[in-house]
Length: 248
Image (cartoon, rainbow, N blue to C red; front, side):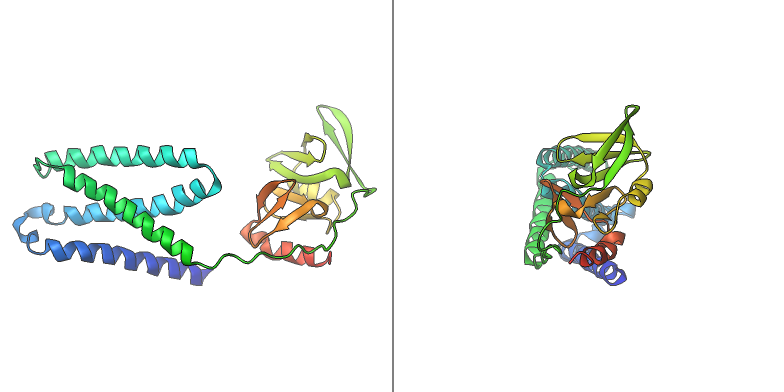
């Protein structure tokens, strides 16, 4: 983890230095003509621009666009870029007394597109995460005789283990997703984990506890049950691997 973090920091530092260096090559003849803090304001703008590129690529693009939340991605991107455009126009007019601001504002959009293009190209060169073969050659039979007894809306409900696909934490409640319907009961995830048999039921994150009998696909950091993709928590990856190995 520390090695990965160091690599990310070095990569971003090199990218920032490259951006500042490229700008300085063309700016070194004019920097002395500016006085006071105006000499360095363009470089502060570049720092802000780089921070925006990192936010766009790692937050908006990865966590919205790549997770099929494209409409949210588009709305947030256009909103932030619109606000930045207005801010740039105001600063250029009032601080730098620039009459023709269009080229500088266009450069902001071009830098954003270029930074995104470079990042997208970098991602395309990364190896595709290896898909881990499901630990079970055959799913466990759904005729499991065990049952989970709980209260739903004040009434006792008995749910056969084999019908449970996965459980989702709702703080002091648990949502139980079965092959037939979804039930919500007042129960903590820890209590549910203690009442369900291992290794048939495996905790994969703080929010989810799955029935491996319904496991459809399994990758390095996610799995699919009932057509639903669930993320495996970083601190649970080793535990999940060990539990699934016991089922082989």
